[in-house]
Picture 1 (cartoon, each protein chain N blue to C red):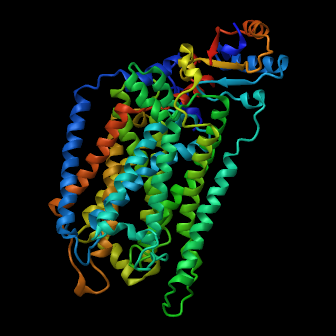
Picture 2: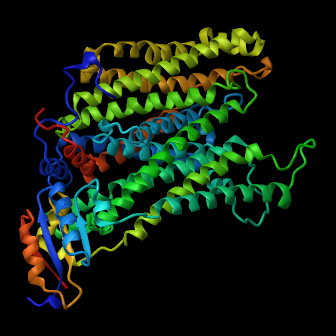
Length: 179
Length: 455
């Protein structure tokens, strides 16, 4: 099989530990390959094994919180102090304690909306179709099977070597992902 | 909740022998293949009938005005605000289970958080109807929102009713986001196991193309943790705002600093009661006893008892501080609550919320699903009566005896109350039928941790 016809190799495992060990071994022996891991639930230690570090969700949520909170407070302050000040028995127009509740609620809402958007956009969702969905076995990636994908983008790669390595792992099956 | 020494025979969180495959199979079969029998259909029929009543009532209210309810001066709040506080309080159960118990790494939340969150979303959505309809001209409800209008006026930022609007808006939106995002991996499971292309498309569309890649999981887990961290202060603030609707008013019986924590505890109390009332029949009808085990019911009952004791303290503190202050109006309200025209609501509240939960001290009661169901139902009734008692006994006899007056509910008051229950039931029945009622990916994590392995 020529590497150009296939996007990668899909290696199937029965459990999270097998997948984790396989990812660690392939990363050690073929450090230049792009790897992806798929699982029906999060596997502890997978991020380190794949070398993922920051995901940025927290920073986006902080930004959303600041926009929501500071923005709401600024709107309240502008409307009550500048745009439509009402003098009630000489009480201060900038009554900040009373401005906090709405600002607090919008802080939380801003953080949540930004967090969800950061998660979805960062994860490339929504993307309703994907080449992996054409592989029949991949249906079980959302149920009880764990998968590793070894990308074969570089035509100079010797697919056979990769296959040999994958076979030597405790894999249930090795399949090709069509282009 | 770790096992106490006396709980040696505590059942597991998962029945023995559960694997990734059995979890996936049992839960996804409910949405994809199960034939929902006559009980589901008859529930749906009841729910639809009550919804039509509500819909008809809303139409009549829009035509005639809020006068179709029994409200008038001096009792201008009554059922509408009572229903609102009751429903939004019920919502707290789900948020607390999915937020606080997640942060506390309580594994037992895994199998109940999905339906509890659904309960939250539906209860908060139902609750939001009442303050809007109660506005008098509900079609202008958007005036609560600060938008650039041609009249050049702004909302009154210093009003607790305005805070409440923001609180409901944020709470409903965050609850929906939290619930939906947490469901994405399970929707992907349903997509991959769907028997027909149409079903696969339906769930595939909702799953947004989730693949379970390691980076996706990582962002998903970060988001879940942070949303849980946000949900806890959010839900405390929401119920504090609800309490401030009352305590910001200089009315005896309302103007009290204990109201915010008292309302938070009351919300938790009724929320856990509703989780039990929904969970006990659901686990039986859908055959989920392997996942929602006796241990879950036991833990839920313990939290309900704890919250109920805080609520009891609230009742005690109200009476105590009235006598301690010797303020004649505070005293008058307390004595009216204990002996006045509506005293039966106070004493019924005490029976439901203080006395009935004392049975929960006994492990044998906590392990009996039918008794638990009865107690939880009593708590729900008691919490509704408590809000009625708080609202009406303060309003019906004000500072000035010339403006005293009784409140009597009309047919439409009752219709809106049971109609809102119908709407809630309708949404919950559709949820049970269509969406994954138990979080499969969280149960897989429990399986990985070795829960339910033959131990």
